[in-house]
Length: 149
Image (cartoon, rainbow, N blue to C red; front, side, top):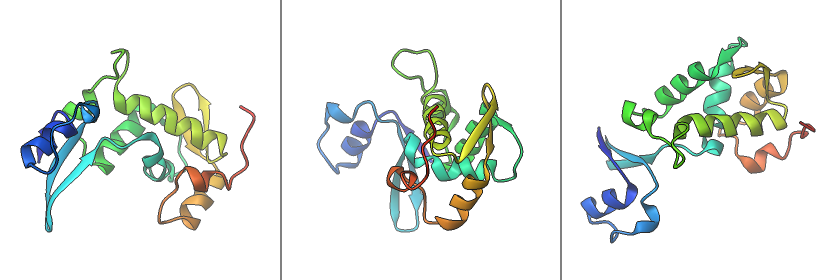
């Protein structure tokens, strides 16, 4: 696996698209795949819904670090990708996206956080995993009742 700093640099290196600054904030990695090269960015918060629910599916309470490590494993993220900071430098990209992922899953009633930085799956979350094996996205979240919090 080869880590690349930005999608623009990757595209330029591969000769797929001309270099473009508009992609320079995307962190990606290249992995070999039986059909060629697979390009995968650090997943956006809404692409983490299933991985987060899967990580919580054992019914136990997990802290944010546990969830980030499950996301790392699920998406084969490197240590460099896990350490990448958001523009303010105050937190990591993955930590930020896990936080937003939790926010929307909680509003949909699929996860709960019994204490700060601790998460657990709800019965509705377990049901969603079973009913939507193809994946949960923002459109599918609208199916669930939104909480006031």
